[in-house]
Length: 318
Image (cartoon, rainbow, N blue to C red):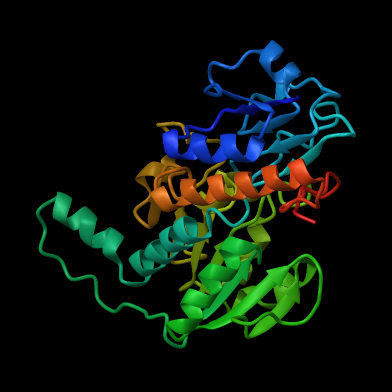
């Protein structure tokens, strides 16, 4: 009999489902902010994002099923033992984050952020021409689950979609053109919108340089819903202030939270949401996380191949 530690906020229906899968194994339900190092060290399976520094490469831990898509805290050497399989929640967040990104896209294209500012000042202003997804060229940087859903949505609205990914291959359905990451400079000048959904890896920190923004159209928009450190906030600010791009929107920043005195907050052509695209803000997301956890718990019980196994070298799903 082994111990399964569940730290995500499950309800009674979820518990009944997990308990049934667990069979004779013991299931403990303890919130992540209350869990102790001893409880973590006793677990053979953990479902949830427990503090990484409390795992201490436990050799008893066979499966760590995260509630997040991001894995960066757990692939640091010394956090997990070589006998532990790490799985993330890829597939749970695609609806919530892609819809948030689409909303930001339309907000920028239709200048709704300017009209909101005018409303706050009781001004009946007309900000002139707007743009449309129809016929626009969208560059999606990061073709994971979220990036693909966003791409397909914009393509269905009439956009031409260019995907950017680490490795070359066949162009996926929903993508009109595919380039490798190291060739992004060949498509940035064509972009009306650049949507970044990059994870946090060694190769993505400050990925968007000053030169990237200089290559873009002055009418282009930049949207970041991946990781904040993909772009230095001061570099983005400079691009906005100098008219290198028309406007930007971000659900993530570097640092995060963005300090209250950072000038990006006051930048008129910048829209900021405080990392709320994902999380459990959309109830559907949490239900999908429970589904993934239950599926992998079944695989653990039966000694089968897991879903969403993470490659420790890249931080990506295998």
